[in-house]
Amino acid sequence: MTRTIDTLGKAARHGMILRAECGCGNLRYYRCSDLASVLGGGRDPRSVKFRCEACRPKVKVTVLELDRDRMPKITVWKPDTAGGNLKWRPEQLK
Image (cartoon, rainbow, N blue to C red):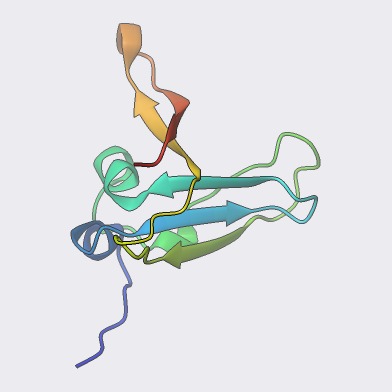
């Protein structure tokens, strides 16, 4: 039975990746589990607001399920709370 992934918590349970893509070509990937821990698991993944630093238009958000046998070489942005401040740092997906 197919179900809709409508919260970050459901996407995190399935190990999904969120892709934020701007019209200018800027592209970032985030683990849904990281976003759920920062923003809350009940939040709709398509309602998460992202801003492009280059052109600031509306960013297109897509939730992806990756094949664990053939993982792509992408950079995933991960939260880092050094010194009490939340910063996102890039990390290679393994």
